[in-house]
Structures are given as structure tokens and as C-alpha cells.
View (cartoon, rainbow, N blue to C red):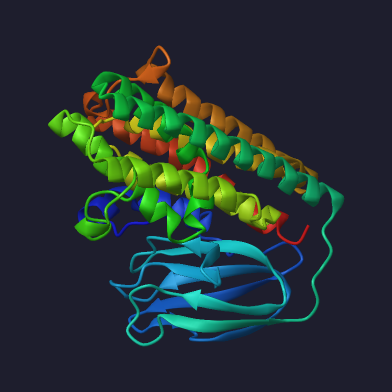
Length: 370
């Protein structure tokens, strides 16, 4: 779920976000493509409009002191093709896409006069290699499988709520969160669905707060199951998500971007404990985000290995490092409550994500255009 991070929280995760967004301080460029600079300013996006040729493109996004503008997105209608988030003043980020001919929208939320601007892409659509098509097909199967699992587990969760079984509902809640967290960037790409399913208190107006987390609060804070309207809407929304992913268009760079975005989810909400603030099952979500990031990376790994075999091996080792960092907190099939971790524990987990995010952030540019 996209959120605005308060300054004190943002400073604690800035390192992870810089690494995930920038791959260090080096300029990134999509393989066989070009790099385009975008600056976040008080007005919004600068430049306010772009006209580019089709093909592999890396958007290098920097913040020039705009406190209220920290995000840059490329939209196709209301569908997010690519984005960087939480680019605070002085920070930068990037993402890569293979641009296709058409008219799109640049979106810099919070801008005063250039919040939205046109991106016109000219030229012809380039072909996709068999290896790239296979990578996308592999990830599509994963996403479709996870959304099917999400529907099944959410239905069980709703049934426990309807039966009034508080403890059963708590267990089912944790199980239902896993498939959602594994594919969260896909849900976010649809714009309206992620806030409906995963908004936390304060993310949206109170009257519009729906999804998992208001029910979480009812269960853990009030010992109640919550109103039927919340259960019904949650079920309807996850079924809608399953329907929408059947037709989503993907490319290798988007799959790679999603892998990095999932690590950003860990850095900006799981590490701080704000994601599951009532149930404290944050480590369940943490692991699911990492599992989803690995599934996305595994889909494009052969493309990376063909060009940068050492990088592919490095990323493999960094994923193993994250698993090792989580191991001390496992209890059976789950984890200890997040409140049991010390500040030293959370710093160690954060360092393991930093170590993975840096090399993983290079993958989008490598696979774009293949």
C-alpha cells in the first residue's frame, strides 16, 4: 500500500530506499536503451511533458527539495506501468520500462501545477524474445496462482468471521495476508484496489477505510469480528483482483521492478511495524514480500544470468542472507510477534534487505528490451 512516511520514520529507512531505488550512486540505463532524467519539484514533474521514441528506457528520478512531491509514476489510464516512491528531498530512484507507442501520463502526486503531464511515445513496437516471453509467462502463472490462493484463504477468513470464531479468524487472517503480500505491486498497479484491500488507518478517509486492516483492528483490539459490510467488500475486492490479473500486460522490466518494490514494502512499513499494528504479524508479511520478490526475480533470472552471471549469483546469495536473518524469529510455521524484536534485531533485518536491494535494483535495466 502506498503511503506517505512521516519524516522521522523515513530517516530510519532512507538507506534501504536509496539502495532499492538507485543501485548505489551510478546512473542506470536500460540495455540497448536510454536514460531520461525527471526531477520532482514543488510544481510536480519536471519536465511537465515528454515526447520519447519507443524502446527500453530508464527513468532517473531525483527530488529537488520538494517536500510534498516524493513519487513519480507512468500511468496507462489508471494502470501504473512503473513508479518510484518515497523519493524525499536529496534522494533519487529509478525504474526501467520498454516503452510502447501511445499516449501515457506522468504523475507526481502532490504537485501544485504539474502533478500530471503527458508522455507521448512514438515509433514502433519492438518484438519480444522467446526468453523474455517465457519469463513473463512464468511470472504470470505465479501471480494467477497467488490470487487464486488469496481468494481461497480470504473466503476461509470470512467464514471464520461469520461463525464468530475470533481465534479461528485470527489464524485465517495471517494465512490470507501471505498471498496478497507476495503480489502486492500487481495489486497496486490497478490503483483503486490496493487501497480498498490493504489501506491502514490514516491512509484513506475513515469513511472509506475497508479491507484487511479495519477487520484486524476489530479482532485484536475489540475482540469482535466487525460488520458484515467489511467482510463482503473484502471478498468482492479480492475476487475482482483475481479477475483483473487475467488480462494484465507485463514485460520483463516490470516484473523486475515489482521485485524491488516488494523490498521497498519491507523497508517502509514492515521494518517500522506499522503494517500489522494491531496483530503484530509483521514478520509474516515481511517473509511474504521477500518470497514474492524472489518469485519475480526467479522469473527473469535467466535473462540476467545471460548478461551478468556474477550479478545473478550475488543476488542468489543475498536472498539466502535474508532467509538466514529471519530464521531466529521463526516459531513453527509462523514467527514471533514483531513487538518481541529489539531495535538491534530490526537493524539487522534492515541491513539484510539493504544488501539484497542494491544488486536487485540493477535487474530492471538489464532485462528491459529483451
